[in-house]
Image (cartoon, rainbow, N blue to C red; front, top):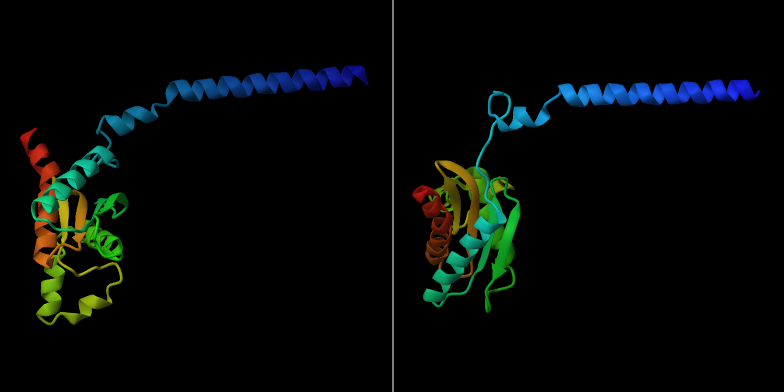
Length: 183
């Protein structure tokens, strides 16, 4: 009985050593990082992305522009997929402003165009657009671009008018877009 336990234990140790050797060999021969960083693999692309620092810069520029205009507003900044990165609701802005600004930002990011385009289309009779659930067709959403690629968007709601929402959003977006253009 003692011999069989010893043989089983020895076999388990040998199997474990074999698995470790195989793992070490696979690790030594595979290079997962190089295929993603070199850009040589046509199946993998690299693209610019809006960071938290960039979103905060956009937000600060929009807040400064709203302050110059003595305007309120809720300001949302999203990434290129419409995911919220930063949000600020200025004092005195109506409670739903946050949700509306997020919707404007998401629309601008996902459709890669200013939300004014959708509002104007609906006003000109293209009412079928109101049936698109992912759409907030209200002026005030502006895409944020890097070298022609949409990397995010800003949405503003609650300033004195919808055109002022858009002007504040443009000021915010240009805080990152201009910085990229200068590099």
